[in-house]
Amino acid sequence: MSKAPARDVTDEYYTLDINILNRAGILSKPTSGTIWSWLGSKAVIGGVQIDTGDDKLRISFRIGEWPKTQTIRIDRTRCHFGGQRPWFTCPGCSRRSGKLYGGYNGFLCRICLNLSYACQREDLIARLRRRISKLKSKVIEDDLGFLERPIGMHRKTFNRIKDEVRRLELLELSAIAERFAPET
Image (cartoon, rainbow, N blue to C red; front, side, top):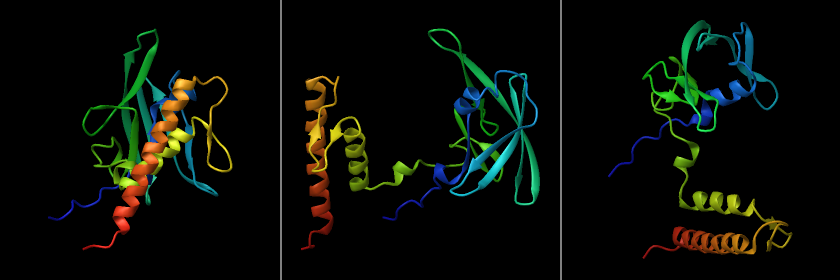
């Protein structure tokens, strides 16, 4: 049985995040000519010019040598404790989305571009390591690898995290052993 071809990953695309734009104040009032840039390790690697107004976002950008302009609708939903939450309306499928990814057809949602998340490509060992790391970030780990309870954390919570880390580390070791075990 053949494996399905690997899909592109969201990390490989420019991302417009509605929450970041909202926190930056770009969506709060009509604006014109706002430049939004993506930074690489040493320089700016891409950018768009953003104009907002009437619950629409108009972006201008380049794909290769071709300048492109795209209008994206913004939908708003009410929050339970007051206020509103903005959403992009995907130009491809009209689905509400918090992030749009820049492709050759402009900025579209993850589903329209058939993208997957990087963690969906991870094998069992990498997933276990990520889960262990996430749990260990909640507690203190000394130089020898022993876990210590942070001040203010309930003992019951700390013990639950410590037990889960042990269980996942044992699963990780058995997965490594299984991977490198000689076939018989």
